[in-house]
Amino acid sequence: MNETNGNGTSVTGQREESLFSLRDLLTIVFKRRRLILCFFLATVAVTTLVTFLSPPVYEATAAILVKKSSVEMPLVPTETSPLIVSQVSETDLNSEILILKSRQAIEEMLHGFGVDESWRREGPLQRARRTVAGILGSPRLSYFDNMVLELEKKIEVAPIRRSNVLQISYRHTDPEWATRVVQGLMERYITRRTQLYQSPQAVPFLGQEMQAAEARLKKAEQALEEFSRTAGVSVLAGEKDSQSLAAEKEATLNRLAGFESQLGDTAVQAQQQTERVSTLEAQLAREPERLRSLGANQDPTIMELEKALVTLQLKRDALVQDFTPENRQVRDIEDQIRATQARLKEAEQKVAGINRTELNPVHQNLRTQLLTARADLRGARAAHNALQAQVASQRRRLAELDEKGLTTDGLRREVRAAEEAYLLYRKKHEEARISAAMDQQRIVNVSIAQAAERPLRPVAPNKRLNLLLGFLLGTFGGLALAFVGEYLDHSFTTGHDLESRLGIPLLGAIPEQESLGRVS
Image 1 (cartoon, rainbow, N blue to C red):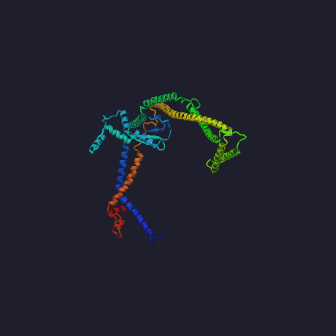
Image 2 (image 1 turned 90 degrees about the horizontal axis):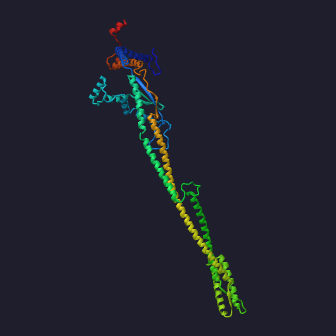
Image 3 (image 1 turned 90 degrees about the vertical axis):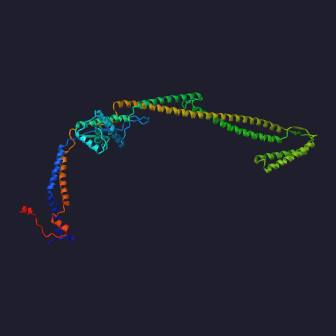
């Protein structure tokens, strides 16, 4: 009875199909057993022969520590000291790798070993290789050039991860030669790096620049001293010195402020005196120079008119204090005063023959005050003009001091700049001299972390690994070759192949005679 699963498929049929597929695989392996065995044995034999007959390869290694601190001096002087410790970047390491693997360094290393272009130490294999390369159209290179190309290809330089160390490695069948190559390359690298990073002209160049800066400093100091002598004040003294330019400028500003203050006061006084003179002149014009003397025959009409005139004048003076001369009330009083004066004059003419006159004391007093006020006005104007001249003089002096100050500042800046340049070049010259002396001792910003030593054990071939790989390659390669041969074989091997290809059921199978004999 057949068991069925949830999908209605026979479980027994699935097991038969699975067993049948495994049987087919075993049938293919058994059918191609000779091919698989031959391929396995050939692969293992070849691997064993190559492993044990290949010459041992030795690897010489060395390590270089790259430091950011350096004694190299820049040709352009700066304030930054060259001895700075900071993180080495990937760009720095790549630059060192390029210098280390440069062709010039390899050629100089070979020349140091005595190998040059005249060498003809080629074996049969090298000559055959050159002949084939010539036939194929490749350029025919000398033995020396071939050695350079081989070293460029086989020498490996790589940075160790998360460090400032470069590892140099070279493999060769001769351990002594591998060690010599690595050691010689490191020596040529240090020498060449010194030549690239340190210019031999740095010390003379900085010496010339230092002398030029010193001459510039002396010239600037002489110009400042000469200007100090011709300026009239000491431009070299400090701010607290009474003869210094700053003290003179401060004193000039103080005098100018005092003169301007006095000038304002005299202007106010002159204006006041001018107004006083105008007032006194107006009052003097209104007062008669002489007055009639009082007598028995004096006319009462004249006395009445004089009293009225005085009353009008007093009223006019009171109005003038509060109103302007153009005011209507003031003009009316003026008209009345003129009319009263006309009537008084007519009355005086009538009694002129019988009346006597005398000097008017009010007129005399006003005249005296007017003369004094005019004298004071002339004095105020003279003082105002004198103060204006002083203010103009102090302003010209201040402008001169400002101009001298600008010139002095420029000269002082030139002196400071020349002094800074001289001190900087002097410092850089001394550092460059020390750097050159250190370069002569081959002290640079790289150091040998691990020197090249003669390798004691070969790194290739790895016999155990090669044999294991040969065993695995022979096994899986033989199986793959068997399946490929079976795929290319179109004959019927099993009944399942017959049913799947022809689409007809298999009724029975007759085994081969050899199979029956083995079974019996």
